[in-house]
Image (tube, rainbow, N blue to C red; front, side):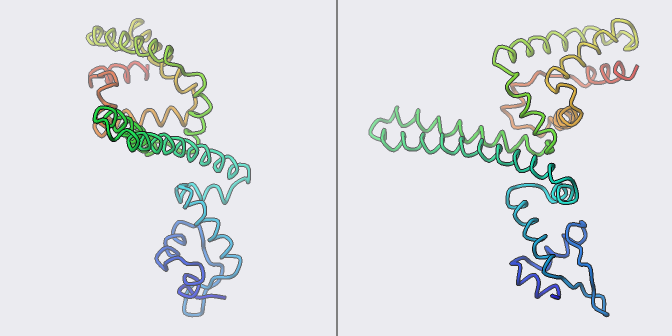
Amino acid sequence: MYQTQEFAALAGVTVRALHHYDRLGLLKPRRRTGAGYRLYQDEDLERLEQIVALKFLGIPLRQIQVLLAGNPAQLTDALRMQRRLLEQKRALLDTAIEAIREAETQSESTRASALALTKIIGVIEMENKNDWMEKYQTEESKAAAEARKHLWSPELQDRVSRQWNELIADVEGSLQEDPGSAHGQELAARWRTLVEGFTGGNPALTDTVSRMWKDRENWPKDMDQKAPVIKPEVWAFINKAMKR
């Protein structure tokens, strides 16, 4: 048996962290002293090592709680997804390293160095973009997006972008109409089709997209400039039409 301070020193974590894990239900000691102090056992150390390892991999604590309490297959899926994300980051870092190497070897040419440095900036911006997207995602939505990635292409992106621009313009031209009318319902159906074309109807991915658009004022500037402008009146019309 270990009291909190002894257990924290043994595990290499802080007492504050142990209290936090207890509050979240991640690591609740089974026994207490007569005075009410927590008592940890050796099996608690194994559980704590799992928590620390998963946290180190970037998995949120509340997700860790679900994974450790659920089916082992869920943990396997989460680890697989985390591995893919780390592999993507490694690929970006490899590209950045190669760009820096080019800049080093081309330092005698001002123009060549500028081009290489521009490439480095592009890689860093891509990494920042990925980090920015993560705050809207869950493990389930990440997995759904990864599974659908192969379906997307530059040609499809161009076509879908045109369809969105046309639809937004059509809705703007129909703001004086009843959202429950046949035309209003047709616009809502087109909107729903375009959203489902990206999400595949997956609820987790749909929720991620919804939360991302609601937070548009906090998007990075370059992402905001690339996305179509959707006026509040358009959102209001479509929301009413969707509820009919």
